[in-house]
Amino acid sequence: MSKQARGFTLIELMIVVAIVAILAAVAFPSYQQYTLRGHRSDAQQVMMDIAQRQGQVLVDNRAYATTIAATGASIPATVAARYDLALVTAGPPPSFTITATPKAGSGQEKDSCGTLTLDSAGAKSASGTGTCW
Image (cartoon, rainbow, N blue to C red):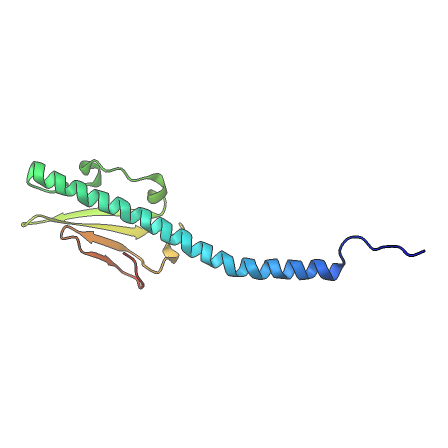
């Protein structure tokens, strides 16, 4: 009488665990980069909204708003948790610069783009490297 073995051996289970670990080691950094790009895109969208609202304020008042709140733009909590947004006006002639600086401890400081900048002329820049805009 022979018994039929059922189930998996320890070696087979260890091979599966090793394969899953290798896949996770490859996938997790890609996921992190994807989330960093997504949060950066959210901040850029808010910056573009503020710039568009500044254009309307200029048409209405012949001067740019000096604060983000004065533009009527709202900063979503997801962006506010990861970036410090600042608006600086200058003139004459009237001009403004919007900056989004990654907050320390938010995880966004790992983004290679660093501080994002958008000015009244539409010039977009980043303090870091890579294709940021």
